[in-house]
Image 1: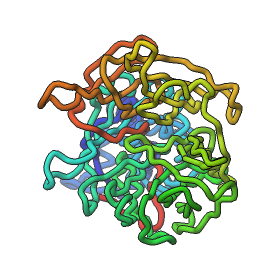
Image 2: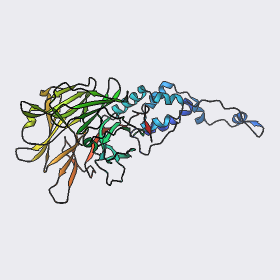
Image 3: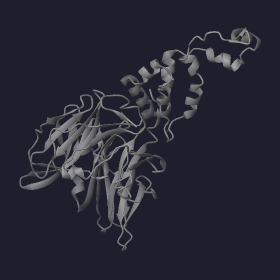
Image 4: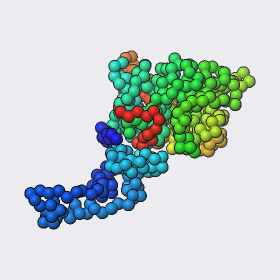
Length: 431
């Protein structure tokens, strides 16, 4: 079994891992050593003359197996991977779904007030550069470390479709329009990835993708929707446990057109994925939200806030905000100034529970690149000065404090956490 040390640093407490590594010989490496002779005297006799230092004798204390696993579940991913090499029983336990879930739950609870994001440019600086992702803090976008994507796309433009429990779904951004279907699952923390098999629908155009965790089955799904205009969408779902695609029928209405979320992943909230969609009712085209239940694989219509239709909308997007569905709209106020208005649905499916939380003013037109779970708005502001291009700004929606996020071009952004998901399985490749 090969063991690798990661180049990047973990986000957990490595001091526990260092202390724990000193206990490893007592916990797992218990073997008998045959006596050896040196100069006519048995080494065991020499040890009687030269007794072990006290610190070495203390290593013979035994750590109960369940306590050892409990300690392992609290360590950073980098350390856990290293401890797989200690003995077969540890390796066997670390790769079980129970241990992976236990480790993930501990990390989720530990980092719930200090989230992380992962972002990458929508295109590399040059056609010859390999795409690189940056892991950063949610609130500040301060860089923690970078990881290089270990697989290639024909257009060299990888889109982050979604992120669930440290597992990323990536697809070729330009192929969503041309019809190619290269899709990967990737866990950068453990340096493993998997290419998805060919889809049922094959080469279809005008595709939007969603990535979800199915909590009831501890499984992962990719939803692929093809819809060119107000017509019946073609929908298929990939399930990681079966490693296969299958068709899904939509029963609500045939007159739908799903809209892409562009640079932000389709949000996953309370077991459902959320898309904007256009529908035609009584010769009038309306914007609605379509919610896909990951468990039942059924769609449900949701209405937008009643007061969101006032004034012209320049830009809309859906996002996850502190476990709730958020709706963002960029438009002009009565003074003709630009602003982002942000609503949150307090109670799932209840239109009356939409609550307008924030209004973020802008001096110029702005497009939402990402709205993070902890309330940071990453926006691209369009400047009207010739040859100056766009400016990217990170705004705390509660304090309205602005910060330069250090991003030079439009980027895909998703929430992120280090995990052991995809540590083993069919057709999983290590690098």
